Image (cartoon, rainbow over all chains, first blue to last red):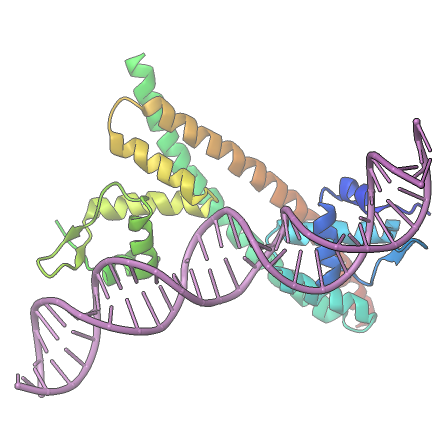
Amino acid sequence: MTSLTIAEAAERTGLTAHTLRYYERDGLLLHAVDRAPSGHRRYTDDDLRWIEMVTRLRSTGMPIRDVRRYAALVRDGDGNEAERLALLLAHREVVERQLAEVTSHLRAIDYKIALYENTLDKSA
Amino acid sequence: MTSLTIAEAAERTGLTAHTLRYYERDGLLLHAVDRAPSGHRRYTDDDLRWIEMVTRLRSTGMPIRDVRRYAALVRDGDGNEAERLALLLAHREVVERQLAEVTSHLRAIDYKIALYENTLDKSA
DNA sequence: GAACTCCTTGGAGTGCGCTCGAAGTCAAGA
DNA sequence: TCTTGACTTCGAGCGCACTCCAAGGAGTTC
């Protein structure tokens, strides 16, 4: 099993070391990260997999506190799958609504872009 | 020409009166909103149309400072269409990249959702 | 053994985008 | 005339998600 320093974990996850410590402190990880005898953090593959999931949730706009709630459910182990599912389904709803909204606003902006392109073509 | 109070403008635009004042103060509008003799703001149809554009830019994630820049260009009038176009094109790039990212993360979350649905089906 | 690099912690600071509060003005209605 | 309510300004405050700093420890390199 590979075991990475915080700098390596940062590199692999695309987060900063600061953010990795912050996530851990804030309860977004499933447990405290292992330590080397020196006290330095050592990230396992499982840690990285979980952090990837956190990243997916975060970059689809899930607030930190909801990620924390989800982490707490997973941490508590078997028996709350329905609750986890509900949380993810609710999140999917939000994200899809948001995607639709952004897409429709983007179309309106595209229209504006087309107008400018026309104007500039004619004057060129 | 209709002329709306700030409360009416808020209702129509979906923003709060606070936010409308804030946008004006921060240079996101094309000019100071007209005033009734009482000093109260009166929003015209043109104002509302511009605010709608601002809303589109904002809700596709354009930072306030870029909206301000765009507003400044439009305010300055003819002659800088190329610059406005460049700004909008750059924004579109960003939004499209973001849409792609969110969509792909969402697919991964959907996969997770499917796993939970399976688990729960079996145990039911 | 000195310098360098990477790490540690706790807590403060930052940037963004609002959001709110206080104190005052004004017009309309009872 | 008095009250009510919508508005005004200015400036402070807030929530979020980091981001950074200071002071110190440990291990490697010259």
